[in-house]
Length: 197
Ligand code: SF4
Image (tube, rainbow, N blue to C red; front, side, top):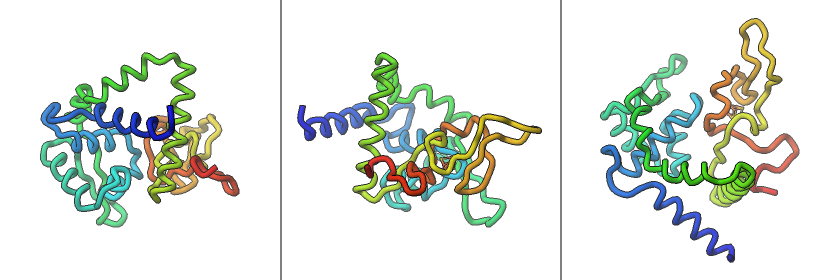
């Protein structure tokens, strides 16, 4: 199979896996928002980070968020430090609806792959994503354990978290390590990042 056919296959897979029409009362675009805020870490649950992830304008992202807040799927909290920035957290209603996510068909298909194949496939997709993000000038979202800013040694002392984010200089809870982050960097100082090799 040539590279063009692979690219079209990935695009087609993404399109049909996102579903069409309303599912659980939400459009495919609203589902993208719901999934994002359920997966993103506390530094990334903002309108601008969602706009960057979704590859859209702030205005379009705000409209999607407004609808999800009005329908009770997202709760808005103002930052205590600057009073202007807001954080959006998925509500219990949102978490319950995520069980009907149309993406579940693709999750089941990935689940059926042998574990070794799944690992290599994930690494290939990550590499393709990195390369396309660099070419498009988009941020490369990722998770803590493969991030250049991640500091941790698996040992917790006196109730203090063993993990820390070197980018914002804040401790991280174990449950945050697999959440999506806009500040992710795959490049250790002096090393190329994913997709730039
Ligand atoms: S370690 Fe990296 S991925 Fe984790 S919170 Fe910090 S910047 Fe984000």
